[in-house]
Length: 417
Length: 165
Image (cartoon, rainbow over all chains, first blue to last red; front, top):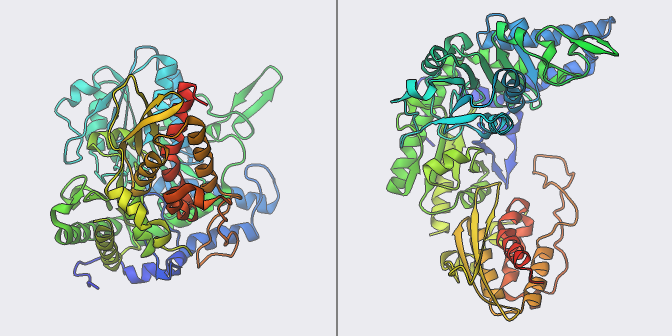
């Protein structure tokens, strides 16, 4: 087992103890969870906060005048402000909208902003490395409104090709991009794209589902107009997604779904929509999940995001080095060669062993990796593969996890040779 | 807890390493059909030549994992030369072998015991299916069932398109 030589500002061994799931075994072996890009594990503080809320405080929010209803409302709105501050929102109380997940947040933008601003012939620009969540809502709208979609290409190193950025965004009404690729780990220069997009008069939508859990994130520094991410990839619970939108744009938008909470008044002849952000939050929101989200934010703030980032650079450097040493030309690691250019995500091909088979053998070792197209089929086609295997890290992963991964991969290689 | 040897039988690995009936048939007279597994992106191309109510020839192309590739190879060997009704029956038998009686989630050793029992495969006549029985273990790995059935569903779709019953 290798000892860490790098300096990490937090004690990974102590962090691991905060995550109850990491104590379990799979097939009699300690679990090695390397699928945080799909969903992260939750620290005890998150689980406890949610249970405590459910056991002591739960009531519907924005409704009752009794004590626990007021407490629940205060906690729910406090989570909104906490997560908004975490990503640098200038006005978190108004600019943070809660939805079901990142996907719903992006659909919310397509339905509200898209339907009021996009007309036949208008141009949307996306990148070849988008997750389907930032492709399909726009394709649906494009089919409905006869829009044109242009693509920012990806080069062989997994970086966006910006030679013609000005030309690509010229005439565009909307530019959508991921801040960090869920497949390649590529960290995109969002601010650079946003600046060019704004010069062209386009609105900028950022899928930050992978970036927020792993990089210090500042929506103002992005210079974007909408930024979407989800709690369950940032040590929080499933069931709650977060959309930051620039206040003046949110103010101008119609509601998303119709129902309770999103209205100020309903008459037989119509309704008056609520103020932002509640205008976009029809129905009872994910309250317990918001409580969990605030606890997850607090946990990440305790670690500090620069330290989380440094930990992942260190671990990715170690993993890429070990895998290359062990497997040489037999392994292909997709994405930027320099760990400083990528998040803690390693997509790879090992010889001609299919990713499904790799994942199956790894499971015998308790190693959890993702195998498949990672909801990024246009990128898979660009890479010329049907699927990849992907190991991804969280703050609780250490070099021992990577060592087990390498051992298990060795076995997979031998099994299918 | 099922082990890897339940899944990766020697016959399966053999068909994976040396797939039978690999390639495509000239089309026409053959019929070409593509199948996709949306979960993993695997794709398979089945070429069928039906003559006088029988599957005169079949070829398999495409890419996929060892289970989908070996299942396609085993399928091609099993159905080639058979009458269409016999092929239909074999498809039914195979899909029966791959079906799960009740939806359960395998419980982990750290989890509760709910759904701890994995489902029993449907009772079938193992002797009637020959080498295909090697794929029986797949049913113990529910996420891999779609890998094993991809080629069979594609074949059935091809016969449907040809109007062959």
